[in-house]
Length: 344
Image (cartoon, rainbow, N blue to C red):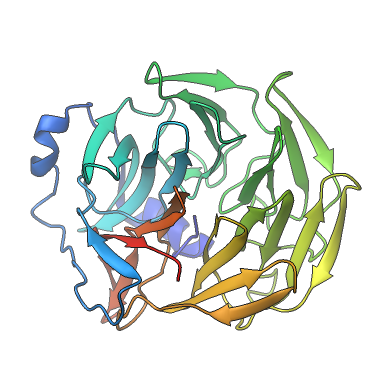
């Protein structure tokens, strides 16, 4: 998930605005009452093609910087956590919501332990599992964090797992085979290029080769056919990058690929054997690993800034995108709509 506020701006929120953690009691029957009167939500309705289908709006409070994951075995998607800044109050969320594509219904699940957080990393190891892993992100306690958790949908419970050796936020993560990976991102003292492998059996972290593109945060990330990909984002000089890199698990090496079609930062995911990225306002692209090439896919048809800090997951050959924020007259306007993308 990607950060729409700079580190300086987030610190200013803590200093000059009220800051609170939102611990929402799991009660799906009250979902319709969870929107604050001060929240100005926008439901986008413009649709320029048939690849995108509007689904039920996200059921909880409006936010940005939420994590997302999908469990193929159960055919369920999940979105949780996030951040909002409304009426000079910053709120961090620790709730988790389940989306069922077959019924188009959102259901609140058990809250994530620890403080509410935004810009956390989530990944699922394998496609025949009932568990997901979530960690890092910024909270009302610390700009970056290292705590890490395991969620089991079969029991709707969370379990504390081994913390990362480094505190991170707006980091990037993916899984390959039986291992998970988290790296780059921002720390409490600056940007990061280190990269870490998680062993779920041993519940331990091992440092791997640093990201080949150097210091980076807010990057676009996905994994396809046993290879992890990271590109774009912002470097240590706040320059928007266009480079694109592949990680080989077997050799523990990064190799540079052809550049992204446009420089930027946004949301990435894999659908089948292809990667996709939603970057810079409404630009949506498809990546072909075999030819190391990109083609522009069907844009959703919004007007401006629609992919800012959007949450996304892939499930049953389809992509799902929702939440996030855009700016109107310099102020964030949070979006609670949710869309399904069917590749052509």
